[in-house]
Picture 1 (cartoon, rainbow over the protein chains, first blue to last red):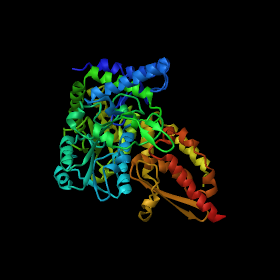
Picture 2 (picture 1 turned 180 degrees about the vertical axis):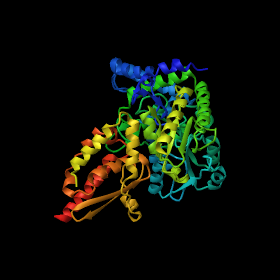
Picture 3 (picture 1 turned 60 degrees about the vertical axis):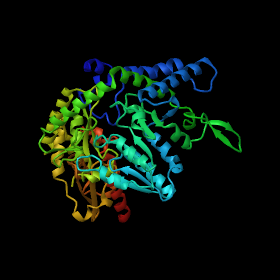
Picture 4 (picture 1 turned 90 degrees about the horizontal axis):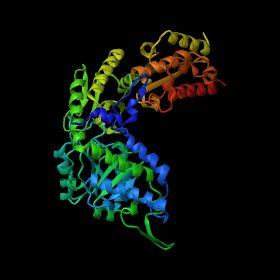
Length: 404
Length: 141
């Protein structure tokens, strides 16, 4: 069992008030809050170790490099990645996806097909559309069923020998539903296609084993797993990362440079041109330590408990409809109440101190699919409580009575 | 007809009667019900104000030398906000609308809606109404 009060004490922001009321933070799918340990690490880095890494011979540069690389090793172990060089630090999940998509012409040729799902975030649609336009490939879409699960039968039918890349999110940000990524990857690999899984919503909420999942590429956002913003992860198999050309040129990513020709550095540096987010990388290591201390199994179990409780309680509100009403999902509940606009609801509950997300969640095709202008999305983390869910439900009831 | 400043002062006085935000919001929602509703033919994608999480349509006609606004929104609070602007500015001369200051929004306790990051797009609404006024001003001169 988790000692939630002890955990909450580690997150200073949870003590603040919003509009004169204690903050209830239910926008964890957008970004997670940071424990003091992570915040302290950022301050400690700039106070004691700030130096550019990987190049200086001086002591400070060595110390900063060691800390940065120790973080890479923590991330490797956390996701059961075979080798540390398969952990590429990026500026975020979107950057990770773009780093792959921009070089994916080595995997996708003219006339090929790229498959995405109907529940993707714009950041996992647009880079692939750009790729398809560039190389003359076609984008195909796995439809979503009424309950928010992917239509796997149609997926099987979409797969063929022209399929060159399959990209889906592990957990949909708009609905929270967990997609059967292992099955999706197996299907893609049968046809010789590459795979990328967008893990923005899974990282930090469930135990992830890169070797078991067996994707060619997997992307994560540091700030959604208690780390700072501006640091993301790109994982790839060694083979896939070696085949992928570098995304950006610059310092750090080279082996030899002459005006005639440049040879690139090996992994992971090939993809880390320029000075990286050193403080962010080091603080991400502290976030991984923190999640390990709490325990990912405990986190996943407790967040599921919040999901079940939240779903039950929300359903007591008359006219409330949940999109993605299955229990095989992350602790994300996307809903509307009768025909009330999600923006109206979000505005009123914000005045009551509750942070939920409203709108299309950067997933307009999902909203079109369900024919709604948007939804209200409450997303929980392991530092949230059932009492906070009760406060939200009361606030929603007030909002509904004001707006009806 | 009262001037923009006079109407804005009236609105500020009305909102000052309420002690808490809930009453102010309820009043705003009520005001939304009285907005001159836009004719269906003008409820087009072109007339949607960009920058709002909800849909807001605005139309403007020139009636002799005065601008008449009509609007609608699919969100109740947004409709209330546009109703406040229209109450103050509709039926006024283009030049007066262009010159109108928007500090009264702050004074009625809706300051948070003026933030550019705010998804309701109040800033965009103000801009759009003023652009109509600019367009009609050039027609008149």
